[in-house]
Length: 131
Image: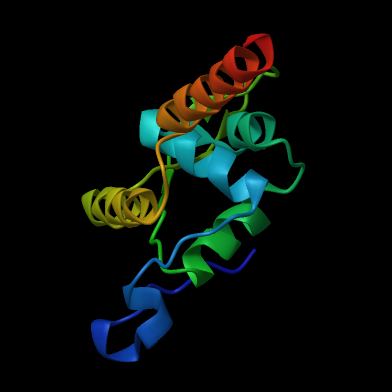
C-alpha cells in the first residue's frame, strides 16, 4: 500500500486552505464524531453510516480539512501485531469547522426560535377562529 505524501505549504491548492463546509449527511456525521474524539476506521464507518471510511476522509481532505491518520500499535484477535490507523482533527481542522459552523448559523434562524414562532402562529390562528 502506498503512503500518502504530506503536502508542502507551497504545493497546497487554494481550495485546501479553507474549509467551505458540506451538506452531505455522511460528512456531517463524520465531522461531529471527529469533533468528539479520535476514531479508528471501523468506528468512523459506524458513526458516519458508511462502509468506506478512508474515502469519506479523502472527501473531507479535498474539502480543506487535514484529518491526519495516526498509526498505532495494536494486537489483533489472533495475537498478531498490527498497525491500524486512528483519524483525528488537528487544531486547525477544529478551527475551520467551528468557523464554518458559526458562519452557517449567521444566515439562518435558530431552530428553537423557529419552533416558537410556528407555535405562536398556530395559537394566533386558533384564537381568531374561536372569536
